Length: 534
Image (cartoon, rainbow, N blue to C red; front, side, top):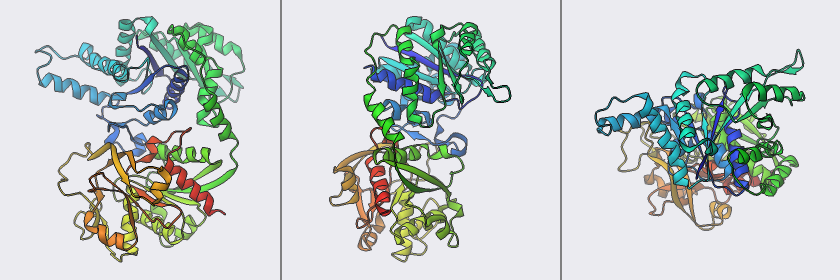
């Protein structure tokens, strides 16, 4: 029977519930179990697709095209399993599904209520992710903090799941803050006791308390006090310390016996976790010696989580190449003709990630031009590819007003635009291309060298495409169309093949990068940046 683990948080958001859940997933997988993970978010948006990156961070896209919470990126990177549309659920999606059923008459005229209809929909989602993945263990993280009014239906739903499957098949982990007061030199347990008591008042007794702290807890009485007042076993109070390297977390939690305790409480008989590959990776991370400076040119750089997967993919490549990645977060609006030399001159590589809207576009174009003219490795992702095409059309072809239909709908020379058959009469919440699509790679290209293959599948999230009306003139001018859709209709990648690395891709390769298996394009980009230092 599938086992269910629920991860809740107390006191404040941002405690690391996602990292705790992802680390536990890695540990259980290392014990030979098949693990599925999901995130339940209390906000009323149907999905994060239309939310500002400043509010929510990046939108993570699954293989089947679901726009999801960024925590799913942590799950995939740690557990190394592809997630799906059942891996993220919001309050908005719950109510949308329930109201659609009510309109179709599926409730047979009954009064639709929070209990049982809303909670039943949440439970259906929880059960589905396990059955679809044929998982031994489903790890479900509840967004927000205990006590939030909008989280209550989710808390009631997971209480019911525990009752339905039996307590031997359900486990509740509560992640909470243990602050360190420098003035008195001590940790405080009250912020842990209060949310645990509140959770108990909702019918859930936590089985494991994970203590999130910035300073090591040296006073053993803290653990005993929390175990006593929160009604958990002494070895079920586990410290989760802030670590210098994110990927140390599974090893730290394993040292604290987290996976052993979880398996014991769920009556799972497994071998000890096989973590040699992970341990070797962490050792390699800690011994890196080659610094490399990468300029990330974007419009949301004030919130680094807006480009979380890109930053992690850069670091993954650094892990494999003995390199410490120094990311310079560059606001594209600050790049002008007057400032570009000062801002960009000392970079070993330039990356322009995805984004929407026309703000900061001219600065990105200047960055792409600077990289091309100064032979600096350039990597354009989604919008970054479109920027490379616009820049090339303007400054090599001499089309001064070359632009995208997204930015200048009435423009004459839209080298990026809707493809024939597309329409702008589309809800913003339904982007045109989402999820995994195939791409055929041309021989003798940078793309072919990096991938070592001619057919790839990558995840997309965009509405605009390379305008085929400009294929011939751009190719004649030296731009290589190195990747096409299998039917040849869509341009997926462009490059300057004579450079060490000057590549633009319409998709988002960062979503498929793993710390122990970096994405080949990021690896090729960092390798070129290192080569340029010599």
